[in-house]
Length: 573
Image (cartoon, rainbow, N blue to C red):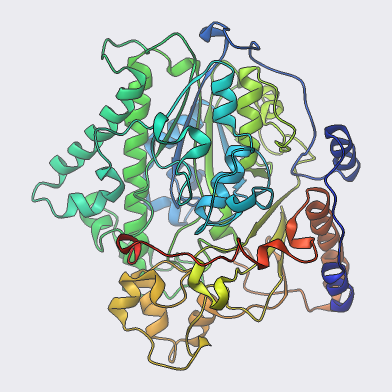
């Protein structure tokens, strides 16, 4: 297929209407056989209704790390010789060994707020109103979220650290500040900053892990009688943000023994394999290990009150590594693929299972409701994972789970002139990744001096390392960002991979080219593959009401492109 026909299918004005009923939506999707699985189900695993004995319904617990991409030591068993070799996540690995390890889990959007909006509501991020963007996000109280649905059915809900933010009101889909349990502090979120300034690193680690313990305990067992408070089942979310920048340079080696030089030759080819970048990556892996230590505390506390084996425990992250080329805010795998392990002895058939189905995190919301015996709302169009739980199988369990869909709109509000987004949508199968960049004349990571802005002096290394918003604002401030930009003359390819403009269409054969270095979209031999993927992606957008296909496009005007003013404390991060 030529580019002209693709362009016509995108730009032709579409008059979208909401589907008349849940039944119509289900029928359309079933006919198309779409992998995201918008198929309605009435089967439940738990007892229905408020007032059910809590022993008949599982406790539901999420351990969800900010900016944690797919890095965990258990994946080394599958992908030997890679970066997984250099991180130790013993608690995540044990959760997976006791239940299911998912090898192909993806977020709906590689940006904090829209990812979380989609996960909590069980639908594509583009259906979440102003929750589809990061800066300027406002929660729509008419949207049903799984924690609030569980609370209405008799669950006691609570959360510690981050659930849904930045956005207003913070953490709204999990009960907001009224359901927050963090009176013992939030210093864990700056893990390496706190520990590295201490003379006794191990003591400082202990202090932070004790903070996690007391925060968790304040929800589970406030009176510390070693019994779960209340008579209800619980829905709890532990969301540390330490894996979000900024962490302290050198902390990975000092605190966790991760030698940056051991990563030599293992970084993806779009990153410069230089000491600064290797150290940056090692420091990130250290923060992953800190999160895993917090997960261990959570598990200890669930055991202490005797509910660990009655708990549906999910561990994952909200998108890929920040401040690194093609990570966070990108639709390549480094940005969208995340770790996922689920343990539920009473509901998962077997253990040490490794599932290769393509999974999208919004599928967790209907899974939780089904497990609890709660009917899912009509807006929650993702498919539950409970059939996978029951199957007992490993490998590809459900043939229909053959593709996932991702995208992004606005991340940092001021990254581009006019507060505009960088709109993208993608379909990812086991073999191919197809991306549409709807506005290829815009800069994917935002503008910088001489690159979308007037040609003036580029900020220096230190500013680029410390201030995200100084240039290319959708790429977090980092040593890697600073090195790439300040070496753009002698290493232009790395600069292009990080922040350069992209063609309207990208197609990659992931089996032959897992790092997406060779764009096949312009090659005539691949046009039928491209056409098929394009049609599937556009159909998915159309039947799920993606505003990006409307005319005019809501995402291109206020409030989605409204001005956003950061408070002073957020100007550098």
